[in-house]
Length: 320
View 1 (cartoon, helix red, strand yellow):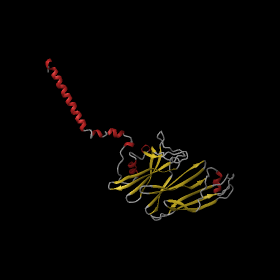
View 2: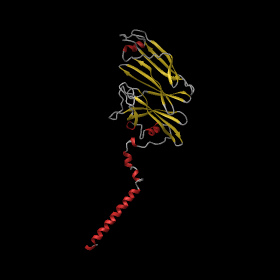
View 3: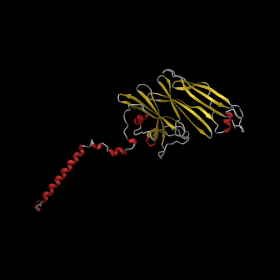
View 4: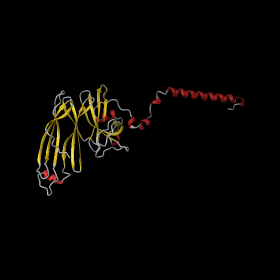
């Protein structure tokens, strides 16, 4: 349609007014939706979100490890790259012990070890936690151990919920592992975790035991570093023959030994848990050229004020 030149200014002004009105309406629409769609991430954003930013589920219907771990570590999966979680740990000094007041957030490879239902409404999960280096690889050198983590759960109407956590109950072990673990009952409603770690150095091998009591909101160390086994057959080949009561062509350079123990727990009462008995067996010599003698002994540890303390017997495991 042709617009006379005298009417063109009025047409331009009318068009501008329409555009301004449309812009104002769009602004009002955006402002009205600011508390709804603007706060909801798109499917693409959710897919690209790192695991650490994913929301953890609030409850688990079961005490299966794979169901509990995501409550503590959002996005956790039982596969190599899925076991990474954020934890708060102290640094480890050159002496292999935690450095006081050095706690900080770290990335770590976290794996569940034990889940214990303490009573009808309380449970605890124990984990093995291995810090990652700057390249995202587990710090699993020979001298590097692992952390024991403890995560506590309470059961409510909706299921099991995380109630408390402790990423750094204790540090022990070698090669990025806390060693072998087991749960033992020491009273009708009291449990302990045993962790036995070991390794070898130039043919000398040994292992050591630590025991932790499990509570509804705390895991406490009861005793640590008890020698449980030792052997030196790999360091001196003649020892294998001597311990088998054979005569080697070349005598051993010193004493020979192969001793191993196991822990047994007596069931006491909830007010007074039972004792811990360490039963040892094996063979050893008292020096170069000496005959092999059998080892058959028991060491008793008594439960005293939340700890295991030596009672009777002598630990026969040689030091090296």
